[in-house]
Length: 101
Length: 198
Image (cartoon, rainbow over all chains, first blue to last red; front, side):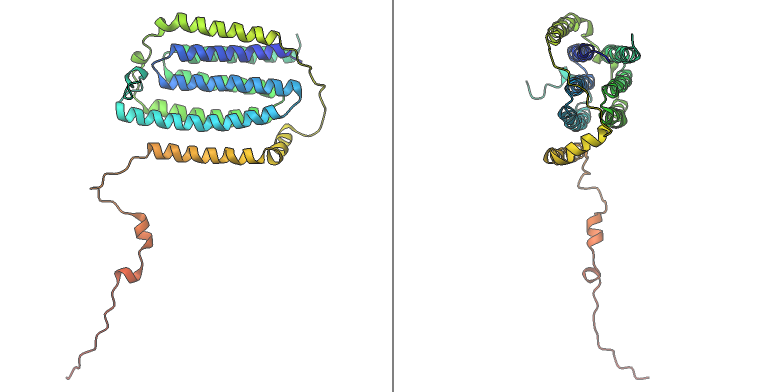
């Protein structure tokens, strides 16, 4: 039996790594998208930990829906990246200033 | 040290190292492959937490579909790796600072968590059966909404990436071909036969 704190620290570490990834790879949209996937994974891990230790299956149902939405999100995100590359020839975030934001 | 703890530490170490590799390696293809390894080890940890169904779904859906999609896109685009890694060292202190503060805060919070660990109810019902029962009874509406979300995602992805052919191209319209009917094309003209005197 592994104590709950071990699992929680693992999910915290994964979340912190993905935040560092978003800041480090500011130019590459694809790595930012991967970092977001990693972040969702850490959150899902948290849901499953508490679902296991509280003996409540609702947490796992929630993870199921998060996985669905994350899959949809990454599919649309990748489609957007493809049309960005087709129109601009690059996926460098700093050069994508068409909206003057 | 019991066996479960050793397994947990092994997978946690692999997950952490591969997550670090995802954000640190130069080549985006390598970071996608490292992300696959990370998903695998986290799926193992989910199975260790008795969420077998979700662990397998993570491997099937994420490794089998989403990451393959990522790899497709990565290999289709002709990326300039050097240009995309610029400013890496410049942002490093900020990244370490913010991630470190975040980590310390979360861990402080986690150490103060006091939950009553519920006694495990030993039952013969498998995890997937329990989840399925819950999903098709209590969460039926949400389940159907999830299906609609996936449909919207399919339509959006196709609609965004579809490339319309220019008007002047000469190509067949399959719908018109299928709809065409004999009476639109063929005109039967009745005529009186002429008398023929030999």
